[in-house]
Length: 154
Length: 256
Image (tube, rainbow over all chains, first blue to last red; front, side):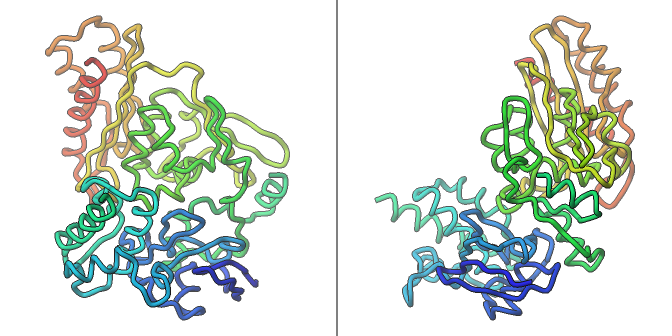
């Protein structure tokens, strides 16, 4: 079936091979490989996207179910060539090791700051509870996001 | 809604939040021919008083639910999971470890099931049949959860697991206490279905001001009444021990 939806502000129409996931559609059919394919069971958060304003794991969304929806992936969080403040802070704080979890963490953090511009350290931890970093680089990730929170608070 | 009920009577697979179904699809365990997405079916998202539509997400319950259910919601999965996972999907899957179930058992909730031929309401104790088996017929859709008109004044949820987020319970439990002193105790992950520890309930409900000895006896009775198994997450012995302690701590919270 043909599914039409908006992705990063652009209208797309895609052929969906039922019953695959939105993650497969993004990576294999639309060439958007920023969302990572790791656990395929909603445990790791590396495929996180924002679907109709809600943070979700794209591996748990059936591709056919996004018809008419609006989607933001990691490719769409910045504006043009400019990085999102979350991406900049993560770069500055060295919050990237192997990089596999990074896109999911960026999207989860962008979702958090979209809802709450000055989250507490606890808010940040709770918002990232669904994102696993197998390098265990959480310290630098939390420091980066606390930096964003302190800068947006002033 | 009529379309959804017609669909399910024809064997179309209902898809709620996808947090269980899509895992099976991703791992090649199932490949449903026809699927209907319930995500945007407005009727299932209605929440009026004590009737919670099956399509209400855990995210919303976390914010708007009665305390015992909201506390449970906060421990379900992660933000990503709670944004899509629904109370109806949780019931449909009927995992023995379902975090949403002990509250429903503790307050004697019922489950509303609808088919093209009519609607029926099934008490929680008849809805859960066995591990991942419920009283739902294949032509029925879970449409709502009905809570009683009056909920106990004190409600507490607790869960034992290896971390705070994204964890399947080793033991989960809800204890409630009404103003008249009546206590209910429901536990998950310690039997094929959620269960009530009725012996412990009767014993503690008959004491007006529980002493330390009463609390110890309550804990012992809960441990005795659960029917856990040993699996990859824990042992029977640990679950039995943990169930008693957890229930006692939740009761102490209700007594404060």
